[in-house]
Length: 276
Image 1 (cartoon, one colour):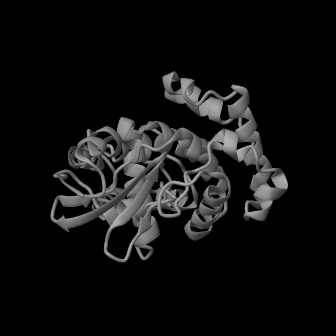
Image 2 (tube, rainbow, N blue to C red):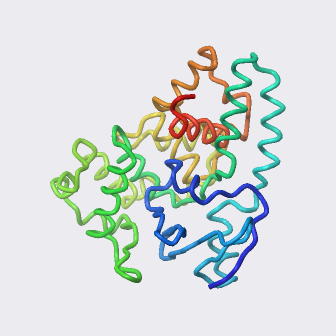
Image 3 (tube, one colour):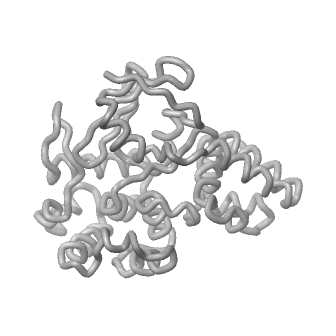
């Protein structure tokens, strides 16, 4: 075990519950388990800003510091966003301020683009428990074993072993052919997820939209959570309701490169403070 200090905004529970990662698991001892590629992390807060992690200091710096986007100062970003609130109508400003406070401690996880492509296709019209269940089934059936019975998320050459009927059998329903299409496009090189890192935001968005079943919301989620494009702000039913609270005007473009971070604050507020 290693002890690390994180002085910036960082709330383990909120990060695990905010809908961007479908394999985070809260454990009985208060720790949270994350899986990223071949790496598994248990992290637990033992005192304010002090965390116990199940990896070496070197692994923390090379793998998990990037995963949690620790090079970015989220406290400062909230302050910058606060300045933008002042330009809004009072009711909208109050709502956005409440959302930023509700979401304080969230971070945009730097996740694998392939995993984000598949999991956000799965996410369509499913709730969080159902998405997580389907993702775990795929991992158990087609990923490879790590430690203590855990499995990796299946790579494209592993997932191609699943026929469309197999994908339907794990609860993917109409999404099964979409997953199959994504897998085939990646394996053929038609969709080069690594090379796509060099595209600008709009080009990346349009390229992702070439996959069957990937609409605007899913493409923006992949841009944000798989490629770290924090200027993208996905719109789902919760964000549509938030826009209604803002007088029907989408507030997120105002936040520029931090639109996706503000979107996460609002999404968390809408899904966890449903009386707001």
